[in-house]
Length: 269
Image (tube, rainbow, N blue to C red; front, side, top):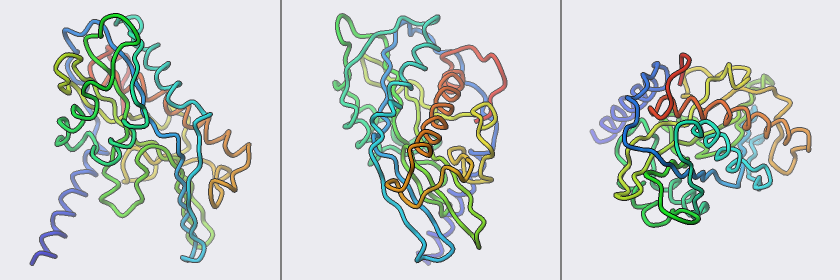
């Protein structure tokens, strides 16, 4: 009986996650009472890779350091640029590696509303202005688990590449999994929370993998290698540019969905 119950629970979560991943999301009501914001980003410096071959003997994986790609710096700059006409921006200090590792262990996807307290506990008293007074709120990008975790697909919690081959037909995907969180700088309450999502067309992605959530993005197989050490300089540059396109598109779209920017165009999560 317990096995049957667990299987039913799996189906409920998987179906619910599938609906969440496919439905058009209505933007939240505009944020009120927030005039100044400190922006932080806590993507990891490790890029995960997993390759599924035609047989188990062809499987491989691993990770590599991508700190020099500057994904966090790009994220902060892109968000700050989008907010600059609407909010006073405050430079902040924070333990990026701590935020990243804690979020990976404790924070679920934003479609499951059960971890705002954990987020508050992670950031409480650990993020502060470089100088002067604290802003009204902190806007933080942290990793998240997504619906794909419940559907049999591997879940990279922030950045990765997943490739699968069935009888020689290879499909390669970039994985970006994060959420944007608005936290009150006085109470540390989570005010808003939204998946950090791009529209695959405007982010110049080839195709989104059907029915596996909004974070697997199909890319040209030229990006594929069996592991990180095997990636050439041109492949790394292709992956880096893909992630850059994603971030540049996802930042303003997510801000609109959170109610921090007026919606200027139709958004697809």
